[in-house]
Length: 302
Image (cartoon, rainbow, N blue to C red; front, side, top):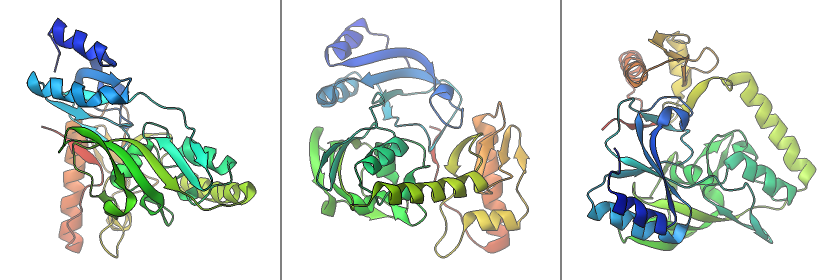
Protein backbone atom coordinates (compact mmCIF):
# COMPACT_ATOMS: atom_id res chain seq x y z
CA UNK A 1 0.00 0.00 0.00
CA UNK A 2 1.32 3.40 -0.97
CA UNK A 3 0.18 6.86 0.15
CA UNK A 4 0.14 8.65 -3.19
CA UNK A 5 -1.54 11.92 -2.20
CA UNK A 6 0.88 14.80 -1.43
CA UNK A 7 -1.90 16.47 0.58
CA UNK A 8 -2.31 13.42 2.81
CA UNK A 9 1.45 13.14 3.28
CA UNK A 10 1.65 16.84 4.18
CA UNK A 11 -1.16 16.59 6.72
CA UNK A 12 0.44 13.53 8.31
CA UNK A 13 3.68 15.49 8.68
CA UNK A 14 1.76 18.28 10.45
CA UNK A 15 0.47 15.68 12.90
CA UNK A 16 4.00 14.50 13.72
CA UNK A 17 3.89 11.42 11.51
CA UNK A 18 7.01 10.50 9.53
CA UNK A 19 6.19 8.75 6.25
CA UNK A 20 8.64 6.08 5.10
CA UNK A 21 7.66 4.71 1.71
CA UNK A 22 8.12 1.18 0.39
CA UNK A 23 9.65 -0.42 3.49
CA UNK A 24 10.12 -4.20 3.54
CA UNK A 25 8.76 -5.78 6.69
CA UNK A 26 11.51 -8.37 6.39
CA UNK A 27 13.64 -5.73 8.10
CA UNK A 28 11.08 -5.01 10.85
CA UNK A 29 10.05 -8.51 11.97
CA UNK A 30 12.08 -10.98 13.99
CA UNK A 31 11.15 -13.76 11.53
CA UNK A 32 12.66 -11.79 8.66
CA UNK A 33 9.52 -12.33 6.56
CA UNK A 34 7.10 -9.75 5.17
CA UNK A 35 6.13 -7.70 2.14
CA UNK A 36 6.49 -4.00 1.38
CA UNK A 37 4.30 -1.10 2.45
CA UNK A 38 4.51 2.46 3.74
CA UNK A 39 5.46 2.93 7.39
CA UNK A 40 3.97 5.80 9.41
CA UNK A 41 6.14 6.59 12.44
CA UNK A 42 4.11 8.36 15.13
CA UNK A 43 6.48 10.97 16.56
CA UNK A 44 3.77 12.61 18.70
CA UNK A 45 1.20 10.48 20.51
CA UNK A 46 -1.32 13.31 20.65
CA UNK A 47 -1.50 13.35 16.85
CA UNK A 48 -2.54 9.69 16.66
CA UNK A 49 -6.36 10.12 16.78
CA UNK A 50 -6.36 12.66 13.94
CA UNK A 51 -3.86 10.62 11.91
CA UNK A 52 -6.08 7.55 12.11
CA UNK A 53 -9.17 9.65 11.37
CA UNK A 54 -7.40 10.99 8.26
CA UNK A 55 -6.54 7.48 7.05
CA UNK A 56 -10.14 6.40 7.52
CA UNK A 57 -11.50 9.42 5.63
CA UNK A 58 -9.10 8.74 2.75
CA UNK A 59 -9.98 5.04 2.66
CA UNK A 60 -6.41 3.98 3.50
CA UNK A 61 -6.38 0.64 5.37
CA UNK A 62 -3.88 0.43 8.21
CA UNK A 63 -2.50 -1.89 10.85
CA UNK A 64 -0.34 -1.25 13.87
CA UNK A 65 3.12 -2.82 14.18
CA UNK A 66 4.88 -3.00 17.53
CA UNK A 67 8.30 -4.57 17.88
CA UNK A 68 7.54 -7.13 15.15
CA UNK A 69 8.62 -10.06 17.32
CA UNK A 70 5.40 -12.08 17.45
CA UNK A 71 4.02 -11.62 13.95
CA UNK A 72 4.15 -13.49 10.63
CA UNK A 73 3.40 -11.20 7.68
CA UNK A 74 2.80 -12.38 4.11
CA UNK A 75 5.63 -11.52 1.72
CA UNK A 76 3.72 -9.76 -1.04
CA UNK A 77 2.93 -6.06 -1.44
CA UNK A 78 0.72 -5.40 1.56
CA UNK A 79 -2.82 -3.98 1.27
CA UNK A 80 -2.42 -1.68 4.27
CA UNK A 81 0.05 0.87 5.63
CA UNK A 82 1.74 0.22 8.96
CA UNK A 83 1.50 2.55 11.95
CA UNK A 84 4.44 2.27 14.33
CA UNK A 85 5.75 4.04 17.40
CA UNK A 86 9.46 4.85 17.17
CA UNK A 87 11.57 2.92 19.67
CA UNK A 88 11.54 4.64 23.06
CA UNK A 89 14.39 4.58 25.61
CA UNK A 90 14.23 1.65 28.02
CA UNK A 91 13.77 3.97 30.98
CA UNK A 92 10.90 4.67 33.34
CA UNK A 93 9.63 7.37 35.64
CA UNK A 94 9.89 5.82 39.10
CA UNK A 95 7.67 6.89 42.00
CA UNK A 96 7.97 4.50 44.93
CA UNK A 97 6.94 1.09 43.63
CA UNK A 98 5.30 2.53 40.52
CA UNK A 99 7.07 2.63 37.15
CA UNK A 100 5.63 4.71 34.27
CA UNK A 101 6.89 3.40 30.92
CA UNK A 102 6.43 4.20 27.22
CA UNK A 103 4.84 1.29 25.34
CA UNK A 104 7.51 1.53 22.63
CA UNK A 105 10.31 0.81 25.12
CA UNK A 106 12.21 -2.48 24.86
CA UNK A 107 10.82 -5.01 27.35
CA UNK A 108 14.13 -6.55 28.40
CA UNK A 109 15.84 -3.17 28.74
CA UNK A 110 12.98 -1.92 30.89
CA UNK A 111 13.24 -4.95 33.19
CA UNK A 112 16.93 -4.13 33.66
CA UNK A 113 16.25 -0.42 34.26
CA UNK A 114 13.64 -1.22 36.93
CA UNK A 115 16.05 -3.69 38.54
CA UNK A 116 18.61 -0.90 38.93
CA UNK A 117 15.93 0.95 40.90
CA UNK A 118 15.39 -2.13 43.11
CA UNK A 119 12.07 -3.00 41.50
CA UNK A 120 11.71 -6.68 40.60
CA UNK A 121 9.05 -9.23 39.81
CA UNK A 122 9.66 -9.27 36.05
CA UNK A 123 12.89 -11.25 36.01
CA UNK A 124 11.28 -13.99 33.90
CA UNK A 125 10.56 -11.49 31.12
CA UNK A 126 14.18 -10.40 30.64
CA UNK A 127 14.71 -12.51 27.52
CA UNK A 128 11.28 -12.04 25.96
CA UNK A 129 11.86 -10.00 22.79
CA UNK A 130 9.78 -7.02 21.76
CA UNK A 131 8.29 -3.89 23.26
CA UNK A 132 6.34 -3.13 26.40
CA UNK A 133 3.25 -2.55 24.24
CA UNK A 134 3.54 -5.96 22.61
CA UNK A 135 4.00 -7.57 26.03
CA UNK A 136 0.83 -5.87 27.24
CA UNK A 137 -1.23 -6.94 24.23
CA UNK A 138 -0.44 -10.64 24.61
CA UNK A 139 0.14 -10.64 28.39
CA UNK A 140 3.69 -11.83 27.85
CA UNK A 141 4.95 -14.33 30.36
CA UNK A 142 7.74 -16.76 31.12
CA UNK A 143 9.02 -18.79 34.06
CA UNK A 144 5.96 -18.09 36.18
CA UNK A 145 5.80 -14.36 35.45
CA UNK A 146 3.11 -12.49 33.50
CA UNK A 147 3.26 -8.75 32.91
CA UNK A 148 -0.48 -8.37 33.54
CA UNK A 149 0.10 -9.13 37.23
CA UNK A 150 1.76 -5.76 37.66
CA UNK A 151 -0.35 -3.51 35.42
CA UNK A 152 -2.17 -0.71 37.26
CA UNK A 153 -3.10 1.50 34.30
CA UNK A 154 -2.65 1.70 30.54
CA UNK A 155 -2.87 4.85 28.42
CA UNK A 156 -3.97 3.90 24.91
CA UNK A 157 -5.69 4.97 21.74
CA UNK A 158 -9.07 3.24 21.68
CA UNK A 159 -10.28 2.31 18.25
CA UNK A 160 -13.88 2.14 19.46
CA UNK A 161 -13.95 5.78 20.59
CA UNK A 162 -11.23 7.30 18.41
CA UNK A 163 -9.73 8.91 21.52
CA UNK A 164 -6.74 8.51 23.81
CA UNK A 165 -7.99 7.10 27.11
CA UNK A 166 -6.64 5.57 30.31
CA UNK A 167 -7.81 2.15 31.49
CA UNK A 168 -7.33 1.10 35.09
CA UNK A 169 -5.75 -2.30 35.61
CA UNK A 170 -8.90 -3.75 37.16
CA UNK A 171 -10.81 -2.93 33.97
CA UNK A 172 -8.43 -5.01 31.81
CA UNK A 173 -8.80 -8.77 31.61
CA UNK A 174 -5.48 -10.61 31.52
CA UNK A 175 -5.40 -14.32 30.74
CA UNK A 176 -2.82 -16.77 29.37
CA UNK A 177 -1.41 -15.04 26.26
CA UNK A 178 -4.63 -13.08 25.93
CA UNK A 179 -6.05 -9.72 27.02
CA UNK A 180 -9.27 -7.80 26.60
CA UNK A 181 -7.68 -5.09 24.43
CA UNK A 182 -9.44 -4.64 21.10
CA UNK A 183 -7.42 -5.36 17.92
CA UNK A 184 -7.39 -1.65 16.99
CA UNK A 185 -6.34 -0.41 20.44
CA UNK A 186 -2.85 1.10 20.47
CA UNK A 187 -0.93 1.02 23.75
CA UNK A 188 0.97 4.24 24.50
CA UNK A 189 2.10 4.13 28.16
CA UNK A 190 1.72 1.81 31.13
CA UNK A 191 1.85 2.16 34.89
CA UNK A 192 3.29 -0.88 36.67
CA UNK A 193 3.42 -1.59 40.39
CA UNK A 194 6.47 -3.73 41.12
CA UNK A 195 7.71 -5.32 44.35
CA UNK A 196 10.80 -3.92 46.03
CA UNK A 197 13.82 -6.24 45.85
CA UNK A 198 17.54 -5.80 46.35
CA UNK A 199 19.30 -5.30 43.02
CA UNK A 200 21.64 -8.26 43.60
CA UNK A 201 18.66 -10.58 44.19
CA UNK A 202 16.99 -9.42 40.96
CA UNK A 203 20.19 -9.88 38.96
CA UNK A 204 20.58 -13.41 40.32
CA UNK A 205 17.06 -14.24 39.09
CA UNK A 206 17.78 -12.67 35.71
CA UNK A 207 20.93 -14.77 35.31
CA UNK A 208 19.01 -17.98 36.02
CA UNK A 209 16.37 -17.12 33.40
CA UNK A 210 18.97 -16.12 30.82
CA UNK A 211 20.82 -19.40 31.32
CA UNK A 212 17.61 -21.38 30.83
CA UNK A 213 16.96 -19.56 27.55
CA UNK A 214 20.49 -20.03 26.25
CA UNK A 215 20.20 -23.76 26.90
CA UNK A 216 16.80 -24.26 25.30
CA UNK A 217 15.99 -21.60 22.67
CA UNK A 218 17.42 -20.71 19.22
CA UNK A 219 18.43 -17.20 20.26
CA UNK A 220 20.72 -16.63 17.27
CA UNK A 221 18.16 -17.59 14.61
CA UNK A 222 15.22 -15.71 13.13
CA UNK A 223 12.05 -16.72 14.95
CA UNK A 224 8.85 -15.31 16.42
CA UNK A 225 9.18 -17.07 19.75
CA UNK A 226 6.66 -19.81 20.49
CA UNK A 227 4.44 -20.54 17.48
CA UNK A 228 1.63 -22.21 19.42
CA UNK A 229 0.01 -21.55 22.78
CA UNK A 230 0.30 -24.34 25.28
CA UNK A 231 -3.02 -26.22 25.54
CA UNK A 232 -4.60 -26.42 28.98
CA UNK A 233 -2.51 -28.74 31.13
CA UNK A 234 -0.12 -29.56 28.30
CA UNK A 235 2.92 -28.41 26.35
CA UNK A 236 2.84 -27.72 22.62
CA UNK A 237 6.61 -28.07 22.41
CA UNK A 238 6.58 -31.43 24.17
CA UNK A 239 3.98 -32.87 21.79
CA UNK A 240 5.89 -31.65 18.72
CA UNK A 241 9.09 -33.06 20.18
CA UNK A 242 7.44 -36.44 20.85
CA UNK A 243 6.52 -36.58 17.16
CA UNK A 244 10.26 -36.19 16.44
CA UNK A 245 9.67 -33.07 14.37
CA UNK A 246 12.70 -31.10 15.50
CA UNK A 247 14.59 -30.18 12.34
CA UNK A 248 11.53 -30.81 10.14
CA UNK A 249 11.48 -28.38 7.20
CA UNK A 250 9.14 -26.77 4.75
CA UNK A 251 11.32 -24.83 2.29
CA UNK A 252 13.35 -22.33 4.33
CA UNK A 253 11.18 -22.74 7.45
CA UNK A 254 12.23 -25.28 10.07
CA UNK A 255 11.13 -26.57 13.46
CA UNK A 256 14.01 -25.56 15.72
CA UNK A 257 16.32 -28.36 16.80
CA UNK A 258 16.63 -26.64 20.20
CA UNK A 259 12.98 -25.92 21.06
CA UNK A 260 10.19 -27.68 19.15
CA UNK A 261 7.71 -24.80 19.59
CA UNK A 262 10.08 -22.34 17.90
CA UNK A 263 9.97 -22.31 14.09
CA UNK A 264 12.95 -20.58 12.49
CA UNK A 265 13.73 -18.90 9.19
CA UNK A 266 16.90 -20.67 8.07
CA UNK A 267 17.73 -17.98 5.54
CA UNK A 268 15.24 -17.14 2.83
CA UNK A 269 12.00 -18.65 4.11
CA UNK A 270 8.83 -17.36 2.45
CA UNK A 271 5.57 -16.73 4.28
CA UNK A 272 4.14 -19.74 2.41
CA UNK A 273 6.98 -21.88 3.79
CA UNK A 274 6.24 -20.79 7.36
CA UNK A 275 2.46 -21.00 7.05
CA UNK A 276 2.77 -24.44 5.46
CA UNK A 277 5.02 -25.64 8.28
CA UNK A 278 2.60 -24.33 10.92
CA UNK A 279 -0.34 -26.02 9.22
CA UNK A 280 1.51 -29.31 8.76
CA UNK A 281 2.67 -29.50 12.39
CA UNK A 282 -0.79 -28.58 13.67
CA UNK A 283 -2.36 -31.41 11.62
CA UNK A 284 0.21 -33.93 12.88
CA UNK A 285 -0.40 -32.95 16.51
CA UNK A 286 -4.17 -33.14 16.02
CA UNK A 287 -3.86 -36.61 14.47
CA UNK A 288 -1.53 -37.95 17.15
CA UNK A 289 -2.93 -36.32 20.30
CA UNK A 290 -6.40 -35.07 19.41
CA UNK A 291 -5.33 -31.53 20.31
CA UNK A 292 -5.96 -28.57 18.00
CA UNK A 293 -3.09 -26.17 18.72
CA UNK A 294 -3.90 -22.46 18.74
CA UNK A 295 -1.47 -19.95 17.26
CA UNK A 296 0.49 -17.75 19.62
CA UNK A 297 2.15 -16.03 16.67
CA UNK A 298 -0.07 -13.43 15.02
CA UNK A 299 -0.58 -14.11 11.29
CA UNK A 300 -1.29 -11.23 8.88
CA UNK A 301 -2.18 -12.83 5.57
CA UNK A 302 -5.10 -10.74 4.28
